[in-house]
Length: 188
Image (cartoon, rainbow, N blue to C red; front, side, top):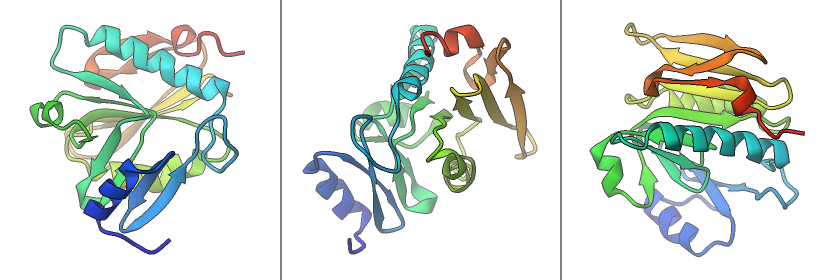
């Protein structure tokens, strides 16, 4: 597919059946769970993302923050990119006004799968780190029942906070402590 501008991508994406991420002029398909493909999730992936999104939604109910799942785009302006993170939280008034994409998240979470794990750890995290508003990036591993939460310190450095099965996962950016048993509930 030839490269396109951000504006062309947004218009084109509206007419597509599936979702597509956009990075510096190039478009990449994001497959649905029921479709074969390199970014395909499974029942465990979807369940872990839903568990986190529901916990965040309930926790943030009486705050200006909102949790979104994988159908909401995240615009990373510095990378000229649009992604569909599994879960994200934004508290910024500008994001409440934008219905098509959010750009000021405080928390982004990706649920790992064998086909996307290295991309989520590397390239995608490199793009996300350019977001000034981002305070935490969580990588949820349904296979290991663990979570790696990267938290940006006051010095701007990202520090890993690993959580194993049985731990309570702390999302400091939104003041949520979530027992791993809840995060990984109903995973068979």
